[in-house]
Image (cartoon, rainbow, N blue to C red; front, side):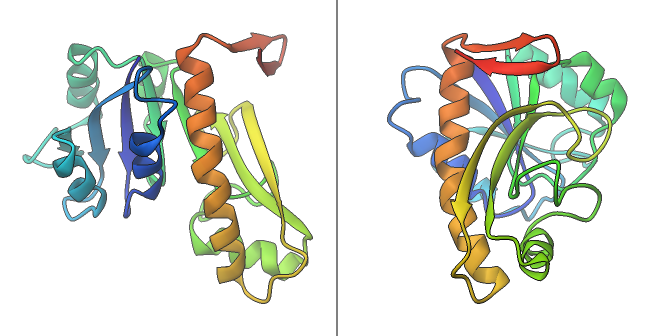
Length: 200
């Protein structure tokens, strides 16, 4: 299965995907896309000789329309948002309907929405005095973090002393969950049943 990974930061989830032994014979990352030319994840892409693209620049693709053509030409079957901080236009989502997923560093539907990314999420979770957090993989729709949930992993945060402690625990969970979900997609085990997503 050919995938494209969209990132805005250092790309630790991209690295987790590329390093997963379970995925080596199942998926191929054919493109890494960012909204920033200085994206640290491009260093990972370079080390694996993966095609890079910056949206809205002459360095890659001027528009989402151009990007969609590039991804279709590459044979991309699934798009993975892994720390991508921009809302994707509806036209692009419609073109890749049910083929765009996102990983969010909290247990949706709590602690999601506009502005809820990175340490902002973990600060909100910490302030709430929640005793569990985790990661969620969901389909992408036209709103931040509101698409149908595919899978979640929980982590105990009852002993944390800072948002940074939560971030560290949740990141470990993300690095487990995302490869598991991609393995399920590659093996055709992700199915919709009424309004729920089932992994068989």
